Length: 528
Image (cartoon, rainbow, N blue to C red; front, side):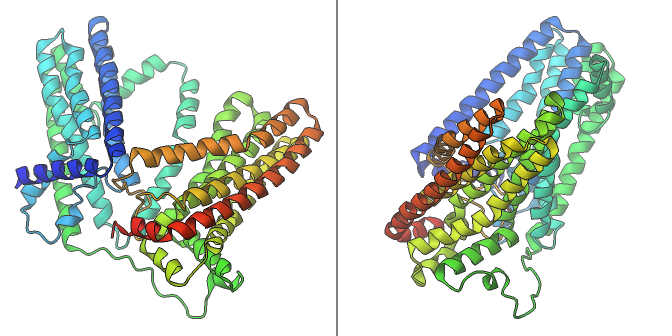
């Protein structure tokens, strides 16, 4: 049964590559990137083993290994499963022995770029101990055990997040909330590292502490073997074995419950007579589309995740910029960050039809025109994007007191909104993406997004950047020279260009929508 699961994983991987040559290109690029990381890592380990002492090498390996294990613990929370080609939920109707299922799922996780790179890197830590043969041998064993710990930990936390929640809302909210501290992780680490006066003493102390925890015990064994500390090495190896055993037991327990407990996706009862946004918009096809889309923005976690992440980006930029530029830099950063957040919300409708999935058939069945469809989606996104961008610009002006540059930043916000809405209206009527299905976690990783899809998104970002250049140049010149004329010109240019981009995008997107609506429905329905 284990061999059958491994063959199934390989078959799924092979078939996914046959769907598109661009997906094969993406896999090759990911493999080359992983190979480059491995070459650099192994070269650094060999160099460290030749010039560094046992303590320095041990500290580096323990810290890096602990970070690796934490990464495998955190990523599944954000992605609802690192590798969903063998989703355990698909085996609910099959009476596969639990031992075989656990073994097959664990080993199949190594049949991919992340798992393979983790295994080779973990076992490759033996290169740092090439001057100590016994330590190198221990590093091979402990590296394999450490890689297995990463895989089992990721699987265990994925199964736990599935079985602990009575509904999908737990996973949605927890996954989105985890993004908040992660987005601020870089600035926080930068602030802490700049505040530590004796960093060279802090890191070894941290490594010694981690070496007696489940995070770093397995990585500390080779260093103690090289130093001849057999007692601590044996104890840490036992901690590592106990960690894997406990994680496996927890995984088995949670997986057993998840396989027999059906997921509940209900949202409770609602009082009758409440039309929500449908009461606020005109009773026209355009108004109906706008109300439906705005309802999704608020109630569907796949949309609302963007409403949480986008406003946080300017705050992260402020956090990082205030450390170098002081309070004077906060105002401009908030303004320009608000333009970025506005664009991200506007650009989100590039996946609108993909998120609709089979519900998109209602637009075709009721005869919604391309103009009404494109305009309604733009209306819903614009109601959210523009006030948020304007709010950031106003707050930036209040903080900095430099009201002469507010006009320029507002112009940049309007230009960014128009560019995002217009381009998204065109591209979403031509291309679709593999996104989480309705009812799934917004962080779920869906296989099938090939290299061409990624390039479409990158091209859209690049085109939007080019479209906002006129307003951006005027806004920057006005801010640098303190000349209000350029700022007000930027506002005027931003308003005009934003309106033009939006109108042109709606018209071109509507024409393309009318011509390709059946193909779009077929593309988004294939996952059903």
